[in-house]
Image (cartoon, rainbow, N blue to C red):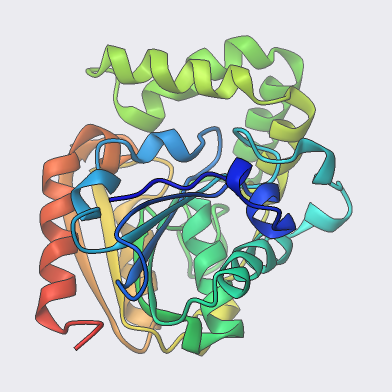
Length: 280
């Protein structure tokens, strides 16, 4: 097993996204993990190592998060999720990867969806953890928040970023997991507030419901049973809209099953990949 970090590469795409590669080398299949708002690639530490005996395991930081190239964060460019999807595709191009398994958490699930729609041959399977194509309620759609709720959330974030981070972390991972609450709080605080606030605004006001019917990649949707950020109604909506998907509900609090219930999350991903092998 080998480990490659961006310090070993001159690739602008790999450096920009702070790509770490562990596990098996080529021609082993690749599995790619992409974190959500407020996190970085270290949030996959309870899940990603389980795949290192069979896969090339790629961990990325969204530009603006973790140890990515912060200088590359252009507020106009990253005013939509499409720029992040292009970053993901740029990494796959650099490494000449096709038919990958993509695992995305929260808003990065939609980033993976957009990338797979744009270049479907790059993706063999998608695993979406607590995804949401739209967080704001609309006629005939329950996203979990009213418009005023999001406005208040963003105002609190901009008014007292430290306090907001302490308040949102228990919602994300469950108040009954104090060590995870502290970890996520610290992760939020390591992100530049201006970038975090901008990305949060892009995240919570995004609407990619119209994109879902164009996705053809087989998809596993993993929803948390007690998630106020992406409630079960959202998982049902995505499952009913996608052409080839299945929905599994994990009985865990919060919005981050890969942290609060890693064993159950791993089990469901393994089952999904084994039912129809990606690399037969």
